[in-house]
Length: 541
Ligand code: F6P
Image (cartoon, rainbow, N blue to C red; front, side):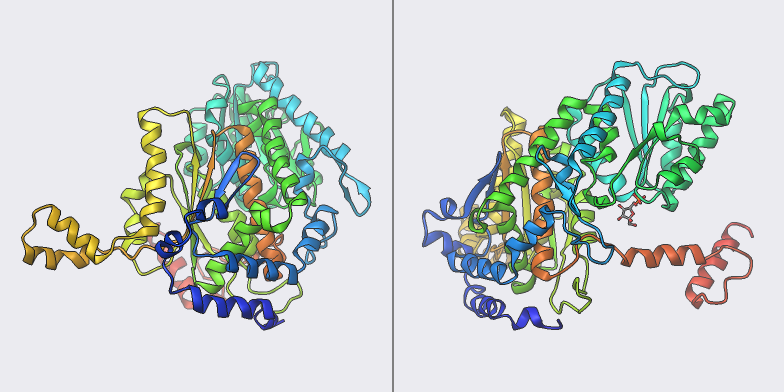
């Protein structure tokens, strides 16, 4: 399937359409259609998605929907929900929606929902016991601190959500996350931890990840040294994994293990027991509200025709920006301090899912796929990187993620800044407007001519605004599910298996073959060999 996608008449129609509309400015599109906002904004759950500042018109959307139909998007979504083994390379289903479902889901015809609910009840029960102060350590002291040891999907989701929902947190329980193998991260947490009151959650689907196991061994040694015996380990460690045997070998009994089903991808797992540290922070009721929020979006996706389906349209417009307008990145700008780690989370979700060049069938895809996802909290980013959006040379689509909040001077300043940024980046500033502004400031005319070019902003920067009432467990669940489905839909259109990540194995494998021994391994390239030698010298070796 080299250029099968590009040979599709629907794809070619979009390319032809691009040639017609790409030169058009959003100013024109708004000027000619006073109802543009009504036409291109729609809701799912509590989320209002405003696509009207995207460089699209009604015909663009119609052509994108034709492409979706030609790629059998409906079947793709139904097959995912049916528990089919859509993760074709690993031979697994990808059924994270079952983790937040109340209706019956099956994998290979076997019902999984009752097991999901039993596991959910079990880890939420532990979370509530910890919050109630009824969970004790080996010495009988009450557990007051929870430290999650995990990386990637076993860290980013619950870490992002714990920060996002900090105002729902129980102040009696400290919840920390350690991902990096850099000893400084674990060290900073252990420095303020009371061993007798600390519970480590060893989160690793594979239970083979070097960073997590290294940190776990360090934590175990730290505990044993302070609690006087290895026997204490069982009382201060629980595990969330799909590799129960390895957890047992580590010393965590089955009673302390929570299973992560193999049909849940790591980066889609925050709804499972991987969410245990989050549940310790916000409690069972809020965790269930998070699940219910995500479920509302699942129901929207499964029941809503493509033309009114928010994640489907978000996905298609994303493909339009990437493959037809040539955007290489997507900036996600949460206008919320609490959502400060959302871009980090979405980086893994999007880039590890669709950062691929080969389709599920093993053939090159032949078009650009996942964008580079980046971003930062508004309004902080405005004073850092927004200049490039205004006057740089790159087309950078933006998602503004905006909780309306309850008002007040600061909150109003925050949301108006978000609206102002999306409008100013869309409108830009023409030379005439720049000149008029300079004249209005009584600047001498020769200075006006000299400065005018420096004030011009081309505008036409496409953006979507996601507006919702408040950041709550429910709206956070909705927001994350929205992005999960967007990424999945894009994978369907590109023909990608969004659920494996074979690429990252290469670096891991290479790391295990690089020793820091006196003589570098013979197979190393001269740069790597040289670096290991230089490192040894720097360490005085
Ligand atoms: O290396 C990438 C990855 O496999 C991610 O897909 C995963 O979320 C992360 O590492 C952690 O993996 P595990 O949960 O198996 O420790």
